[in-house]
Length: 265
Image 1 (cartoon, rainbow, N blue to C red):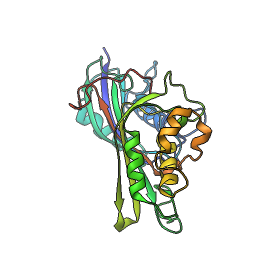
Image 2: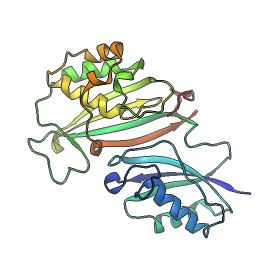
Image 3: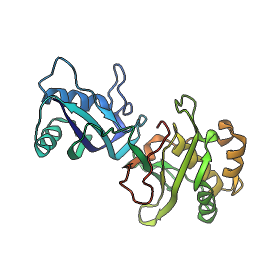
Image 4: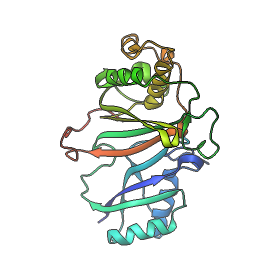
């Protein structure tokens, strides 16, 4: 009887072609799959890794979640040590638990939290180029705060989804949308917490927010974008390097928002 393991892990997305396995490409899922099968001594039926969702090339994760079914039982702490001793240095497992077969890393997700970092320097910092977006213009943070308030609630985000999305619905709920100005590092950091996010949704939102903060859009332009449902009107997509998957929430984990999402994410 197989044992289901839940793992929480971080990765630097710089040298990965995203999370999901792709032929002849280095991916996070591919690296973890290879190591888990090596630990199991390469069983005749390969072990598959199921993640909570995909991230694109260059996108990072502070706490991605996945599960896999292992052919025999290993103590959680031993699995933790084995994974971290064999995985490449741009992935680290933070936690391992044995869970019920009812747990599903993707379908049980009730919400996700993303962070986006923007370097505000006049010129791109070479030591941040793989870990932040960049905006050299002046930003009115009061306007940005007004725009962030317009994100809260349940809306049709058709104007904020890139082509290629496989979602059945573009309606999502955002519970929190905040910013923090880190003056010591000359960075602006956004956080978004919602029941699910569409393909490139966070990066498109960030692109709209910086244009509002720069005066290129009306302060309530997000409300117009909801109405017109036209991706081309949102224009800019922020670079992937500044995006981080910060936390994945599961049903009943967060007492404020216990309901499982009904959307495909």
